[in-house]
Image (tube, rainbow, N blue to C red; front, side, top):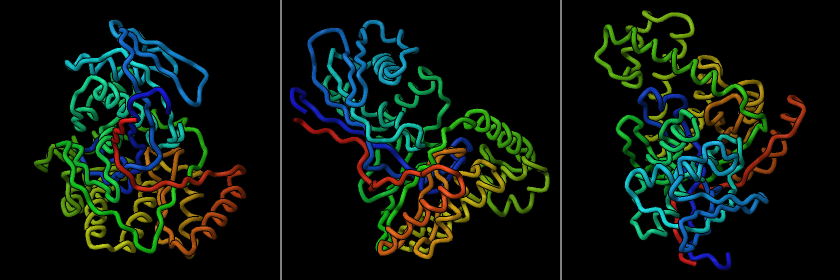
Length: 371
């Protein structure tokens, strides 16, 4: 992009497996995507941050000395929140022009907000000549989303967006905020991401409800088990003491305990190149999210079930918070076109409108290029 000094990107993300366990202290298995937010950046020698977008006609100017005052900005609140909290953490924020170009679809559950936040902070740090501490960037980006934008998110989205590595997923320990890279080589299979195109309208209320149910389960199990979070409960312990729980609280806890185990098995499968086992785990995860955690909905079920029924597909599940967003599927490369046609047609017939299929690869998180 002419006239700018740097091109900085941060990635959208998928969670391969490990859903609704991040706030229970669990380990999740995300990866960064080639769908990203790009910031073209240059210093401007003023005390203003000028924001513009390739996809919007709007231009917004932020005053560096009053960054706390932009919480109601429709398009700029994420960038303003990041600049404000980065500054508040003791970092230098200089006047600059930032042009945003986002290829992560909004409302898709692929974390466009995290990509915007992480790339904004990386741009501010780059322009100020600061080294990029990816963990700190992720933590400040999460803080901006929670405290400035008012979304009570976990750490996974921002962390994966900042720390992603091409060709790898990561086991992210949400409790200690540490990670381990795991090769994500699929051999004869492709990862296909499909958006059900349903707006996320129920996520917030149901999300808070599920959090309350898992907290109730922990409160009861702590009476007999020395655990500090639900993710520490083993499958053996749940088999022994799960009977103390009842109804929906039992179901939610069973999902969390078994999903934590699936993450562990998925990481082992990828370390040994066992893609077939990963596929089975994806199917089991979706079944649990549908029947025990009840966060799928007819749209995601229609996608996952028509995917699972296709002969080239070895596994499919919803990814993200649920009630909308995307599925991921593992599909034999030779059968990808047939798979796309079949699932698209089945979805349109069942739901009445089209799904959207994305071409994306596992990519790096933050990248910085001098133009």
